[in-house]
Amino acid sequence: MNNLATVTTAQTDTDVMQQYLRDILLSPVYQAAVETPLDAMPKLSQRLGHNVLLKREDKQPVYSFKLRGAFNKLHKVQQQNPTASVVCASAGNHAQGVALSASKLGLKATIVMPITTPEIKVAAVKALGGNVVLHGTAFDEANSYAINLANTEGAIYIPPFDDSDVIAGQGTVAKELLSQHNQLNTVFIPVGGGGLLAGMAVYIKAIQPHVRVVGVEPEDAACLKAALDAGQPVTLDRVGLFADGVAVKRIGNETFNLAKRFCDEVITVSSDEICAAIKDIFDDLRAVAEPAGALALAGLKKYSQQLKNSTLSKPQQLAAVLSGANLNFDTLRYVSERCELGEKKEAVFAVTIPEEKGSFRRFCQTLGGRAITEFNYRYASDNKAHIFVGIKLRHGQQELNTVTDLLTKAGYDFQDLSDDELAKLHVRHMVGGMPPRQLQEQVYQFNFPEYPGALMNFLNTLGEHWNITLFHYRNHGAATGDVLAGFEAASHDDIAQYLDKLGYQYQLVSNNRSYQTFLTAG
Image (tube, rainbow, N blue to C red; front, side, top):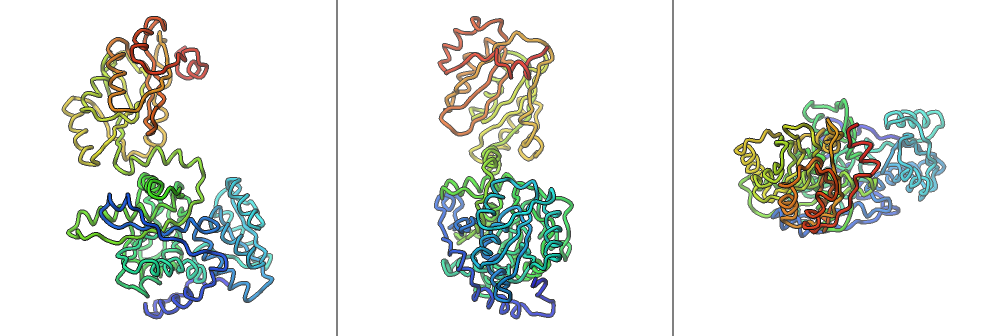
């Protein structure tokens, strides 16, 4: 029942397009799926200078396009064997698509999921009628088990992408897209195993061959780009898991053959650029995309920058597929930390400053009034201190170059960590710790107002009078922020008058147990 590798080198592009065009046009996906809207993104369009449209596959009953391919495949199975059982392996959107499709068609579905799958996803599949079997710690183990289970029990294995019926089902996204807007210049499609790209690309090139088709992959999971470079599918050693919906080590054989014929270009994007795209979607549409769901828009933004740098100045009609919204809520914490970096609106540095009164204030003055978005520091020695600092940028790379010039001229030893994944993911949260010697230290938690000059007001009031021994600050865009700061002082009474003069809400936390356990010496 698995229609694998149906495209051969002997077939012309026209033959392939006719084969898939018929299957896409006759696909019965709307017995389960819905036609999703094509939404304008006015804020992003104005910023990029092109008309940006988003195909909202997050509006499907299972919040993902995967329902289309699953239903088209299972409908074929049901037509040939109304009492068939089906098996698949998935930790995400494919699982829900198969479960709902089987329920609609009266088929028994077993979904093999890794034991590491979050309970919310397991519960979602069960709620849709799927029989969940937990096996293995990763997808590959679960998939092997699913294939063996299908063979031993006489069930039909449902592949997630490398199947002509699945591909045709996904191609119905393009059928809707071109009927909703027939003047598109370029369409951006996320790539994992390649099923969505393959189905959409073959339909677009059959109907409007002048429309450019661009596949978008994460930099750390670019299996299609690797295959195109090698001339055949290859297996990546490892893939990044942030955009878990497209974390695929090897492109499918059939999907590769179609992509090679009908995809014009492949763009790769970073995790930070994906985070920025998630924020763009929220800002324009108040929708929350999963990382894989925002992947295509991240590619669109990168492509628009290429247009800006080329001789082509005419505004373009650009569409991207928001492929899904099955987001683990905890991921939003990561997204909020990284979206400004992805938009080049923030840079992070490691800087060495003198360990003396007023050094932090002088550092801020060197930056010429630019807002500090993050500051992590712990007293390290009597001579110098290493700080982790975030700086807000209004003009992207141009302003970043200006900042580095200012720091260089001022004689600071520094490193730009904006592209250092280890620093952004781990080191920023580990700066500090215990000081090398016992300090007479008073520690306060401040409710810090978020307005220009608030930090300098703090430093001008306190920084010249007291040695700052600890400082942790992160700007999250709210009206107020929390700051943890320590001062070398024998008692609260010594510093109280300056704190009152500052006028910010504060609380003495020197007796806090966690502070004493992790941030004091001896």
